[in-house]
Image: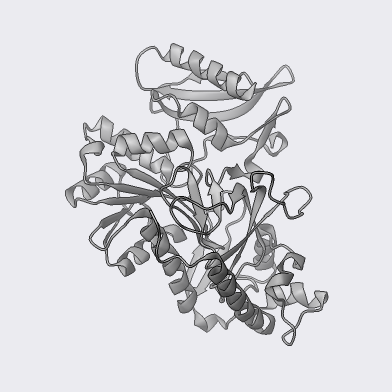
Length: 432
């Protein structure tokens, strides 16, 4: 499938140069946060950084932005315009620390929606679709961008806030929704509720499910389970409150593209912070660093996302020329845990667990017994012979990770369920 609307690589580079020049001119003039970072390096309003000088600029860290908001409450200094220009406020979930508030002007908000419309286009969503957004109405930016971008696309959009899971199922079924937008965790939770209620989701009108908020829709066994229970194509998407909607699936295997018309992507070694060169296969493996180009009101420049990726610029069969992340976001750098000298990413462990269709829900923790760390996996089993499932999972993890976990079967319904980002992995800082 060829995507006719995506410019070629040289066109994208020229667009990046022009947008970066415009951004830097405005930032050096009016953005106190970045002016304070760049003026000591010799840059100024008369001499803003050029695109080829981007690798020489310091990184932007989330902790730095949070600290700036604490020092300059309530919104910090990463604001390019007077407060009267800003029309939207959202904030992060706070799952990795203090919530981060983020403001958008009307122009920056339109940029957000344009990025989301590209996600819809890549997923195959059309104006005659009916989109059900199964998020709450809170400060989480994902709901508002998905909802309003769907409207701009011309589709009918249904809000799912303020409803129970059963009510959400009834709403999307009665209104014959064709597209579901939610976290991958919640797609599986809705499927669980549907099964308990005798509802056949695979026979519904849903044809596409779009997921964000956490890795999962690019994790092979999570993706295949979602597609099986919904009878629909599962599509991954990546973004962040402070960055924007930067990644989308094209439908080719586990590929996720970066919207390079609006974002500049770099890959660094998270330890040395040096740029990673492509290996013999043309792949850069490391932490993704992003610069957004169209969010002039509150930009992030060389932002360390904390996401582990494998980036390649080899042509994608879909026809797009933009950078591809193999397997989407592989995991969070700061979520990796170490047990008995073995590095494990939660997404890799989840992929192993989701290979067992009888495992309804799970939770992972590290416990200590006689000064030895043990990986403990608690599972709910939907089916017969749960002890056999537990034994098979223990062997499967041991074979794949060279690590033998303790697998415990717990009562069905005893583990927590989640609507937004799941918190199935319970580790202390010492274990990461």
